[in-house]
Image (tube, rainbow, N blue to C red; front, top):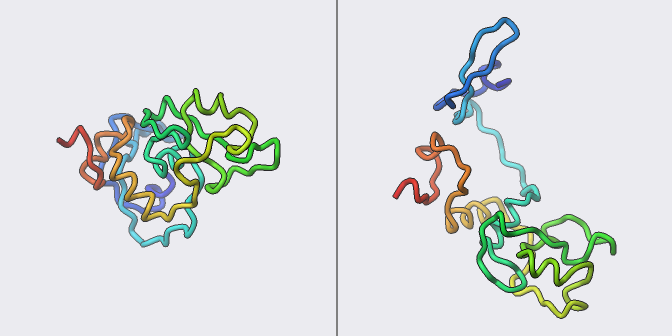
Length: 155
């Protein structure tokens, strides 16, 4: 809303809901905006739960079963209790049974090798991987004309 107020973006599509100003004026909530000035992307990709699942193709890194995001969790390869950080190189997607079985151990101790490596993706690589696995269920329909991901809604 700040970017809209300061005229930094052009609103291309809005949600059905509105926000109210202090004066009581209703302003439609933007859902798709166009930047008026190019902003260089951040060089490194932020570590997020969705990013980990996208990088790993919604598959458990230990058994390689494909799961929905609600059935996945992320696992610290080196447990946090042993100094493992929440970094791309130390986080892997895991299904609940595998994560429970591995517990507070390293993959070697649990005799559960990582079947797909944990690595830091590039922005382009993560975007391409997202296109491969398709859209999340919670993507607003107003975005579909502006993103280049395959979607069951677009079929």
